[in-house]
Amino acid sequence: MEIQIDVNLLIEEDISADDFTALYILYRNGHDLVIKMKLKPNWIDLQEKGFVKLGASHKTHVVRQKFIDLFTSNFDKMFNELLIKYPMKVNTNRSIRVLHAKDPSCNANLKAKKKYQRIVGNKLHVHKRIMTCLDKQLEIERDNLGYLQNLETWLNNHTWEKYADIDETNDTDTRITRKL
Image (cartoon, rainbow, N blue to C red; front, side, top):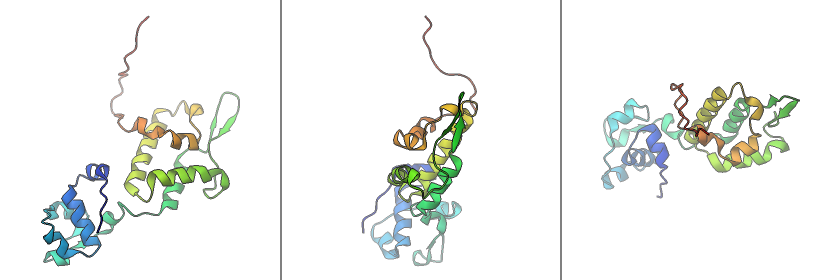
């Protein structure tokens, strides 16, 4: 069995590599393999986080849907959510500029959909992080949406990453500029 571990997922969900590996093995019905590999997951913590339901023994532990959703999701649903959240059109000084088509399955959105598929795959946690960053961007630029990028460009440039580490509670301008 081969297991790929996304380190960002471990950090975001605050679980260890042993926790993830044990849960994944349980999900694939390898209960005895957890003991053979000498993994030391924190079962109590995993149960409190909603990833597992503990049974009387390790063979009766059951992985919950919350864990399964971390790495398997409906991509079309995620892409639709992105299209709903990302503004379809913006007003500029002179006219209206269209940023993407309304229908997720139309040809105008095909390139953006393929790009988003390569970025997200079926990883719900990556989609959630992108949506959180988009929320921050829209909040910060709410008075300046006329300059918002086309959806395809936004995806190609990974623009959401610029908003990943912005502290929403800090209102002070921390830019350092030169004085001439």
